[in-house]
Amino acid sequence: MKTYRELYFKGTSQQLRKFTKQIGNFVIGDWRQVECTEQLRDYISFDYIGSAVDNARVFIDVEQHIETGQLRVDNIVPLEKNQLSIDEYNAVLIQFYNDIIKPYKENGADVDISQPTDDIFNPLSVISETALKKLEQFCYCANKSTGSSHPCDEERWFDFICQTVDDGMEFSCDDLAKFLKDETYWGEKPKDFIGVVGKFAWNEEHAHKLASEYEALCNILHYYKKTRGI
Figure: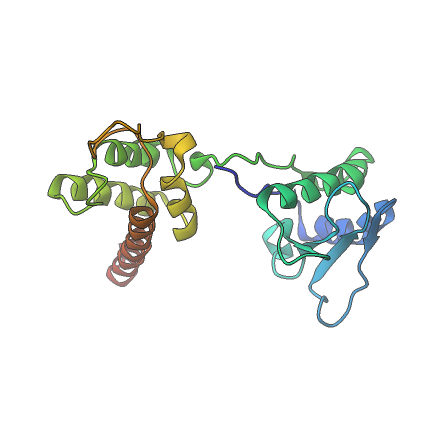
């Protein structure tokens, strides 16, 4: 499934503050650095006003993340429409990277600047390989008309959930629902196949039901571990 690209900047808080002060020197062409106001005091932001991609504003939240040693592009919002598609969002981020960040990086940056991440979702960026294998086993064996209600399916489902909690690597509810529906990853159900078990994606209803169930059960497990000192 398609996903939003990410762009990260890593370093000490001192290096990152230096980056936020210097990056404005590389704003050229169709880009403008947005003036810092009371509303935007925690951000550095840049407007693209050219014609290569959608006109949009790129935000980097400085104050909330700088002490963690990692900044990232937190959001990109359109200037002339209500919403950007995933592809439009990613096109603006690539334009921002190529026009401003890459020249800064090549000029001897102190901070570690990543390449923009891929636009195809990789589940291993969210959960461990062990957890993914358990999710695959559940999905391939489960009755896709009943979700996790069958005792055998429930056991495999719970095993996957416990694994992600133990790993400290968990899906968000939204990402899991989208992933479970992803026919590119799980496969499309053949039109002449009347069965309910096999290698094909979950439908909308069951994907969202499972994702909500996952989120609730993770929260319960976290509460249990916290209150029991586990």
